[in-house]
Length: 603
Image (cartoon, helix red, strand yellow):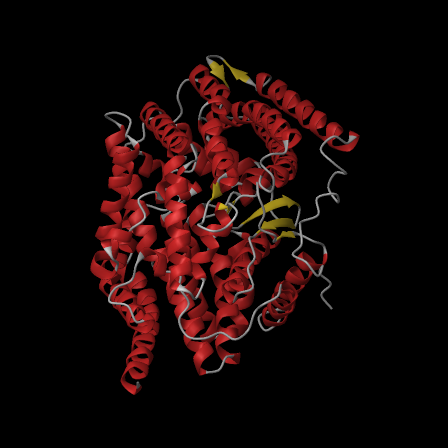
């Protein structure tokens, strides 16, 4: 039985440390600093040869194994302390103690990054063949070693890397924090109401009343316009920093660096994006059909998330918890058990409130334990979001048997389990719904897929062109707006009323505001299409798929995306695979269009 509070729950962090000002947290923070000091000393004592650091021999193997152990230990400490602190910052940006703790952690993280960079530089210079021949630990971390060798080729001098890491809290991280704090505290003034948080205003995009959606949209635009200056400064600052460091490290572009981080190549990206552009006319068909269903000539931006069909069920959080646990059980007891544990042990912060960040995410906390942030509303869409984030938690569970260096999953593969779990819930919802509700769920699915393909494509084009222009100079608020509008026109085409496009989407989406995660957009498309392809294979032959799938999830930090896909007979460098995934979506569009046309003809 799932036990949840009658009101929307907040996550429990007391199982980690009693509080931010507790002796237990202070001791853990001090222990992390001691571990970092010990690692730095071990790096200082690396064996030397006649002309510098030795690259082979028994002493090198022993040093590698010892330092690798320390690196993994520190990574576990960093993960737990970082997630714990961020658990307070992300749910209440006004919490001064949390902000101070986060700042202290960021400063300590500088030393961790400096040590890790020294380790990568040293590992990249080792005789890899001899190391693999003489060390079981090296064999277990073979993929990391090969990645480290390539990364070492793109490092600046040790002094420059140390300086870049030392400046990060006052540059990229500071801009990211500014954006998050401004948007989480931003209040939207809708006519006739008391101001509400941005997250609640944006949630009205799903309201069935068009005037309610329009008023919320207009008020959101007005609020974003008023607060755009710090956002533009943050975006210009971050992109300028990324460009400088990418150039200094010898990357052709930030995109090439992002692809390396995502464990994929340009051929795979081009194949996927090419298939996505080929599919744009189908998504525009869907948007045109949705406009007919809503009885409007063309969709406005604020109609994108409008409900179609009729869902008579208002989903309480308890209902969502029970439904997810039950449906996950149709896949496996392990998946269902993970979800039950998350609800029972209060891993989820579901309540929208002032000071809390918008959207949803899942973060690793320790071992096989995660925490999930959501902004729950009584809709099936929120049920799907919970399932999506629980998919990330399941991925973390599968990774728990690996060391942190083996767990380092790229963004592309990080969406695999989440999309898969979301699809389980969608199909279950469709099976249990009547015809009118099926239409609502089908439209909700297409709505999400449209976001992950059409809108993500516009965001990719925006970021790509932003980097190109930022090389020359900073962009003004109006220039950022015009660039955003241009890319929306390019992807949505004539399916939306041009006068209602969203010029401030660059300010809404936090994914732009990271100095070490550029192009946090195309991985979502990869995750959707790869997840759909895997789900299709699961339906064909469920039994052998389950064990193979869990092995894939446990290995996402131990091979590149192409190699992992090959285990399922998938060639991701081939445009045909991505076109096949789009054919599944196209079938749903055909079905939706036919139902809408039939309903219109029957009136």
